[in-house]
Image 1 (cartoon, helix red, strand yellow):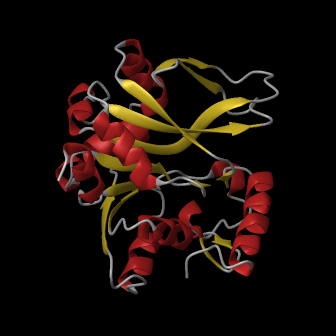
Image 2 (cartoon, one colour; image 1 turned 180 degrees about the vertical axis):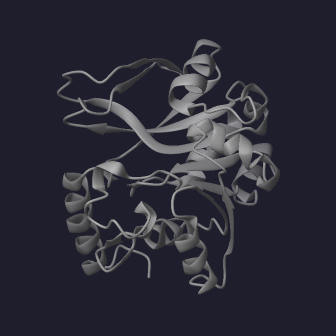
Length: 253
């Protein structure tokens, strides 16, 4: 077996799902439950995410909960995925995207590991291909999925060079189109050393810029769409897209 072929047969990295957010912008839609359990196209959004991961042979999933964790625990207790290993940790207080990962450091079972935002789906992402790119890049400590969008203004954009190294992040502005953060990352455990324990820290503002300056953050280009349930409009658009994917058979059942 050649060294390049060996990358194709690695066990899949564990996935960490960041589902601790309060979902204040869409709280009015379902005030009685956490954002992850809002029903979209007939099932909880968390179920869509887990099925998306399972379809790509990711079978070890850890949920980082915070807001209304009892509802998440009760949903898990019903054992909706008996063939998967799903575990849960609960933040003592909101710690941000980086702080949450540091808090559950002892639960991380693989190196590297995936991190996913808990309110989006990048439907055309090939997790194995992202993993292969990351592991054949000697310098990368983290690989960031990116995708193109026509109206990039509310997201902010990512710039990168011809080696796919991220060079900068542009703040939210009036961009008509551009590459944006796709909400899925592959991270080396070594990154955790730069996150202070018990401190509220953000991957996006505290970790990504530093890794970018050091030339340790890669971009992995993925075809759109990025479905984002963070706003009422995004929630409605996601419902339409997932309804369509279930109808045409492209969704995992």
